[in-house]
Image (cartoon, rainbow, N blue to C red; front, side, top):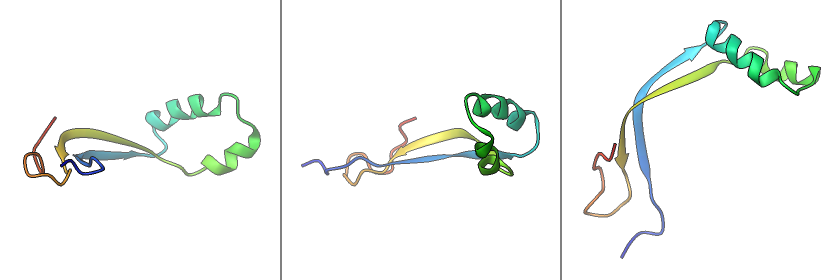
Amino acid sequence: MDPPFTAYKVKGRVVIHRHDKVTAALDKRVWAGHTEEFATRIEGMAAVVLTVEGIYDQTPRLEAAGKRIA
């Protein structure tokens, strides 16, 4: 019998970008079509870039739990 859900674990490295060319490029895309009110919401925000190094099946079943799938 299969569980009523599927679960995964994603492992990798994260780089947080603030006030650099990555956040500058995102700012241009995010601003498109938004008002000045939006500016107060994004001030001080950062971009988080996740490099995935592995994906594991965490569904609780004997044949798959913990198995690397990507």
